[in-house]
Length: 304
Image 1 (cartoon, rainbow, N blue to C red):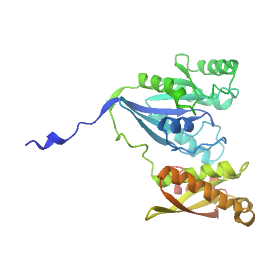
Image 2 (image 1 turned 90 degrees about the vertical axis):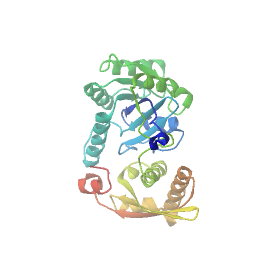
Image 3 (image 1 turned 180 degrees about the horizontal axis):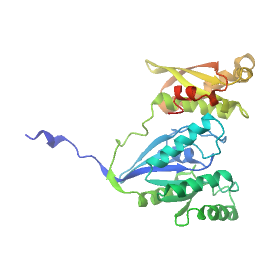
Image 4 (image 1 turned 60 degrees about the vertical axis):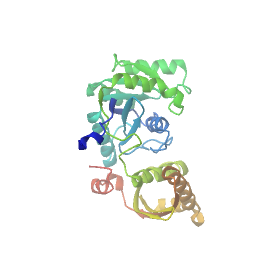
């Protein structure tokens, strides 16, 4: 009997890498979470929520779309900005198709200019995706489209609301129409190639961004240092690396109230993602000016 008879042929269909490109807070990570129906990427209304690229795998009966969710395109000043810019460059290099996410509720500015330039100079097929059309006027939508048309005159355009699955269907259909045929690289139930503990670190950051104000959450890096399964529970230990000693009091709060709230919010997010009960411990460590220190960024895998 031929031993190869039971070997299944690799699934194939429409497939390719799709880079999500845009200024901060245009809805790139929100789109990923909505399309996958899973809270995979950290989201908030603060800039620089996404610090490194994330592969998100969407699979249906006819396609496997490999979304590359990149940090927002912005003007770099310090080492962490360089690391984020390197992540953008990497997804542009790997992509078969670009999706320029646009927020028309904000007037086009320098970051939109950088986004459009990088998309044009990359030379790969691109889609102009006008997000948040429920929050913008027709005039704002027209102005944003006109701005991007100066750089990408031949790119098709689609309007969407990234928080609403039904209003992402036109974008998904357009993506499928522009991707090639090929062999699927991942199993149908795979959502990402990122370890659970790395997603947990991002969900902790999301809780920090939601609960802490102003600049403080941007001065925090999160590392998950321990991950143990004990019965039906996950026991996770994470460190919040902060730049300034005076931020420690803000994070801990009076009587430890703030860090208790942060721990509860973050544990709930991780528990929902992992479908398990979570015991989360948070530790605070001062690492002066960590955002400017390339070696530290490499140690916590924010920089190659």
